[in-house]
Length: 554
Image 1 (tube, one colour):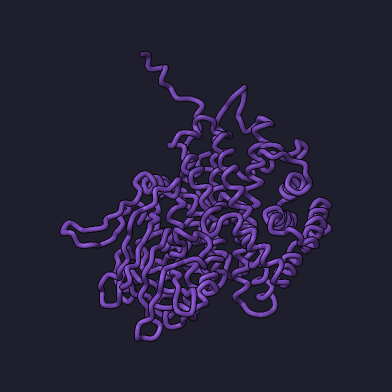
Image 2: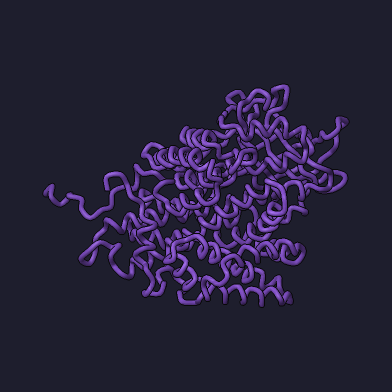
């Protein structure tokens, strides 16, 4: 066979060797917008270092290897002793070391902590989404731990440490720990009040032993877990360490690892508490759901950020491919119909990132005290479930469309798009599926007037700037005035809450061409059900160029 037949032409080079942070104007603008001026230079410098690492060939390879070599359960050692350990590829530990070292479990105790952490989480989740699970749970455990100050004094400094330590040892001997949670059970799922795990109090105050089975326990090699169990006074939150203070292993039997659609690098397990599993109460007996909801809300925001990261990486790959790939006489990126598709994908990605970063800023503001803090907390109460519902729902079709932009190349594992696609439904399921989020948003509307007031103030800041947004706000108010049959309408209403909020934020902060496109297609009805149906009169080229990644050497 002639060697000339093997000449490779018309293929896009790998999207590698770039700064994931600095090449994303939507994210860099959000960080600049939401941080105090005195913090911007320091945070920007840190994120540039992280962004360059995340775009490097080495760190990208870690992500590929961690997924190609999923974790393996070892219930016993070679001598027959029960050990209940999970072996991970070394790449998994390197990813966690990089992310923990960048402060992605440290947000609650430093100025602008949530914004800087959210930006870093968006950056590193584009490399590999699975390792974001233990990062998210460790970060989110802090508000729950604070319900028990003695526990928080011990565990919070280790959880917010910038040191990743993989070995299981007592917390007093570790410079850093990871924390997980195990709430759901096979008979209940999201209905955690149906949990049957029992907690029996011991003689020492706050100490219990647990008996029961947890259906989903992600990252089972974490150092401790927040779990829910039925104590004498009702559903209660507990901290279950893997290793006790004397160095012995707690009774924590890993029965099996789940064989999941995506998220392959991360272990998710079924675990058994045998009646001798030692636990420490967190908060009051009977108030476990209230205690752990702070953790749930924070992980829900990470679902938004994780989906936004998948969207950003998908659109970056699609635009990059189309910039180099030629068909029908020219680069794909210059073809009007392909440009429409890419612009629509970029629009969805930008709306998700802007919303996620605004909610991270609300967390920072909510911790400052005063009336503004109260309003930000109220906004989070309704905006987090609405954002979690909508952004995670949009992720899968958006990533699928980005894959299609690469054609058959996108269907091949080496492109990286199949891994993004398998990952894309996860955040919609995790921490309460769509119905749970919609009902939670409706519950906030019904029972917390301050939440609706904060939401209306937020979107009201953009009123008068775009007639389509104004009309959408009026329509939402009409919907809110009629609460009959609201449960059956909960998804429709939650979708509108999210779209109106995204539109208001883009009108205030995005370039005019972005806000115009969003209001036309998402609020004004001038767009179709599929991506690539934006009005042709919009400045589509500007949207695509804003999403394009400039790689060194381009």
